[in-house]
Image (cartoon, rainbow, N blue to C red; front, side):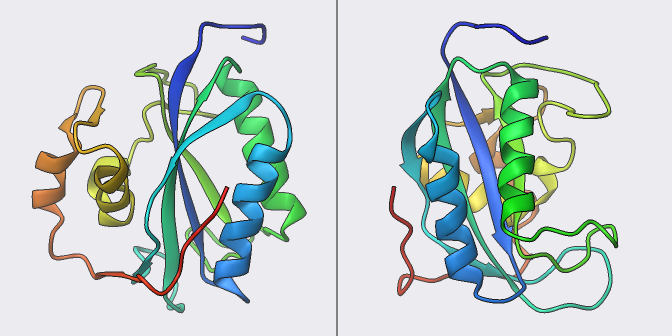
Length: 171
């Protein structure tokens, strides 16, 4: 799957609920764009959200990043996972607390059933913490096979989500 591909838009969801959550999100943005191959397009506002699934845990800070890249999806996954690891991500408990979560939501409308990287993200359409910040930076966005992000957002509007205008990510 590796090799240069045509440029396309990628959507990444960032989340943290352990330690200095905002510092983790900013460090993730810095690390993602520190190496060549990923060109930032937009950073969403930061939202504070209740955890979805998993054990009892504290609230998350979440944001969405859109970027353009020529990297194949598997290389983008390696970069995302290396950023998580560098910031102390431990995968002990599914949907458990974490210093950083970098999810690849969409890669240029690409579809994949690969268990290592399913595209689009298989649960993005169910998560307000992905849909709301994504709609903020791209109101016309769509999830391949699911529909318009703004339409999908109406189905999950009961999920707790508070925009934190006091927090702002920078590229």
